[in-house]
Image (cartoon, rainbow, N blue to C red; front, side, top):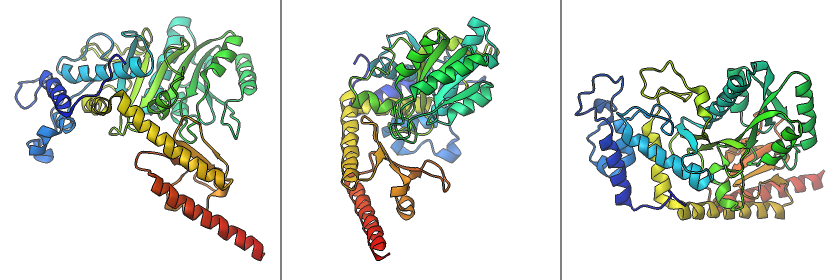
Length: 420
């Protein structure tokens, strides 16, 4: 690890206070030109004594605007302190976690994974338009049927087609022959440029697409493409549970990655992270943002510097080894649940390096699904799956209680069959 380390509480507080001192102070400075301020002190009580020991809350009160992309050119000087905090977060995630080379990436902390995915597709659509004179109807998104709804949302917003790739019902793996046939059909309909989305932990299953499946088939067809990794869920799990993972920037074919800090990292909503290789983000430079120093390259524009501080605090409180330990505990709890389901001969899907267990709905009584807030694949009578997410608050005793009730339901069902 180059950038990521564990810091003591006093070091954390001192670093954030330094960042806030480097920002504009709306309480004391005569800042006449900014349409922004700290949170309203009449409402949010900015003199609360506990704030001195709560650096993240101090930052929310200060309300810094981290508008812009702080890995690319200049940014608003009024918020330079929290911008540097954001750069430190991006260095940890891009270089230490996802194996980018130093100073060879761009990115920002977005208001969520949905925007970060749309940002990627927006960049690549414009890349094909700018470098190949592509028309919108010549560009297509390739993503599996399990992919997050942000992808069809991006297709709709950016007016390019999403082509859905079937997956195997049991393994949730992309069906390669279908992918091959689909690209052949797409080419026959005039598609020349492709944006492939590989999932690093799908929302419903935690399934992980093999990026090499897309690479192999797209290169066989000799078409121009860009490959984005949607690690919104798995980005803070998979790299730590699978030390041999190559789903990162060490693969030269991967151009960008999305990660969500407000899921596994337990940062406040919304804190998505977008990272891409150098030479790409300028395709969405908004030159009309002339009053913004450095202009803007993000979809959202203004965004909270406090969210960057929250992510920084979590990363540097745990350090890499502390985070590995936390993920390892969740893996053990996930394995415990899977072992109990195996004893009951209940079929389920689990990606071995993830902490989601998705159980076929026919094996879960409706009252249990409601009691334990299991998430259905579909909120209707056609639902085929329920998922359990092993977050840190889900302890073995909770799982044991659930399994015991599931056993009772199975036994009751068997007794009713015998009576019939």
